[in-house]
Every structure is written in C-alpha cells, then in structure tokens.
Length: 75
Image (cartoon, rainbow, N blue to C red; front, side):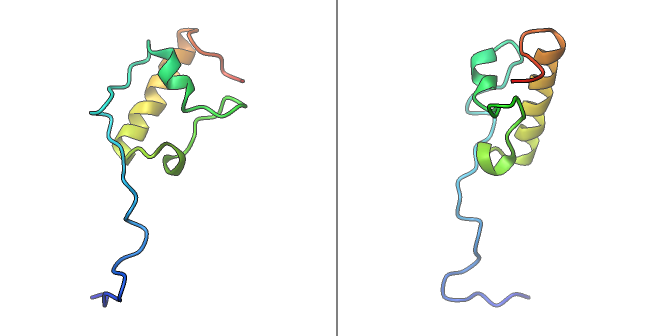
C-alpha cells in the first residue's frame, strides 16, 4: 500500500481525451494529419492526449487512410 504524500499521486493529473468527443474516421484526413509529425510518423499518446483505446483507433484510421491512398506514407 502506497503512502500518499502531501501532493497525492503524481503524473495522473493530466486530462486525457477519448475518441467519443470527436469520432476518428479514416476519411477525415485533416483531423488525422494533425496527429502526424513532419516526417509522417504517428505521434505518441503523451503528445496526442488520447487514452490507449483511442490511440489504437487513431493508428488504425491512419493506416487505413494510407492504404487507400488518402494520406502519404512519408511526410
């Protein structure tokens, strides 16, 4: 059992976003491009702020858009 200090637990004060606020769709290229770096890599969870389930949905939507030719594989 962890003893809570003066400040409580550290690291869980950040607000996380869920994909319920704005559903992720592979056809919405403008939204998906916001989550890519300049080199075309998918940003991590710390950067996007998504929970794990929604980050997986984001990854799947970007990969589907790339496969259909809506987005490039490299930046």
